[in-house]
Length: 431
Image (tube, rainbow, N blue to C red; front, side):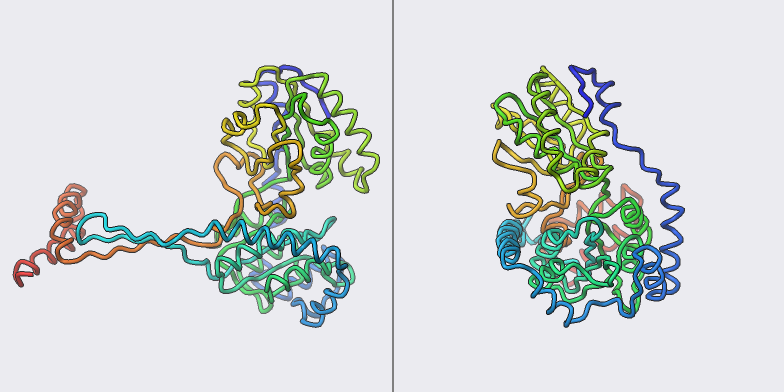
């Protein structure tokens, strides 16, 4: 990791800049994939599976027999861990449900607002270097709680044409029955246009590589919504001398091992503490099975010594990290000063990995600075907020004149007339 000491905003912005995404080059690859899937459906998916996943598939949909077999391959310890995580995620997301709002705003004028589930959702679960069965929980649980009518899960198979058993076990436990062996941009294309094996959906969720991300953004041009734009995973740890260097190092490495394009940042008021953390990183790195990936990610990562607390907070809010760990003495004051991040982890004993798996919050979060204007996935992500209104004759007599005046001043005569004809009718019929 690079070390910066009391840098100016210009310097740390340059140093912490995310890698520039080569969107033009990526779209040149992704657009033809979308077009082929739109034109030839399953045939294109099978061809792309051979080309990108190096597997020949006779059937794209996972069978009941495969799901039943998967359960036997998952250890009891892992099943119990999944059950614990599921219970916490369900509890936290169920509590997010809002009651229907019914309000008489003036006599005879009643407005309502309630949550209505998005009918058809597609969940993308990466299965490349790490089979993310935890993402099945993070997306599947709120989708089920919201009451989505159709849930389609897409995930790439291995070279034997199989899905990781933990992914299948978790999906089955939640109650997801439509699971398709398709990954990459072609999975997003299938969910966007629909094929014989993959139903067309209204909204697509889930993380993925740069090609998946580009495909999701292109999908929005075809009337399909997405959870959020996203880039490589990232974490920022803000820690002072009250933190444990080994803890901080472990949190930085937990994100660095995600991928070579992951970005990790340490912000601290103490250069001495920063050097302790860097030493711990070197020690712990050697013990990781994915140390080569983590090492490459660390080459693009930075430790920033920022002695002035206000400057440190400004840096954090400007960077807008996906994950933010706060391990400082005045933690509550610091937490209240943060307004740009996906999810906050407070104190020495709150590792970011707890949120990734089992604490109950969602791990599908905005990256690449999108935490400035996007929220992470929640129960609300799977519903629409619909409004209703009902006006009685008495209510229209009270409200109508205001509507007439406003419509007339906007020169929208038909809008005005829609009220006027009703008011005239009430006068004529003395109602």
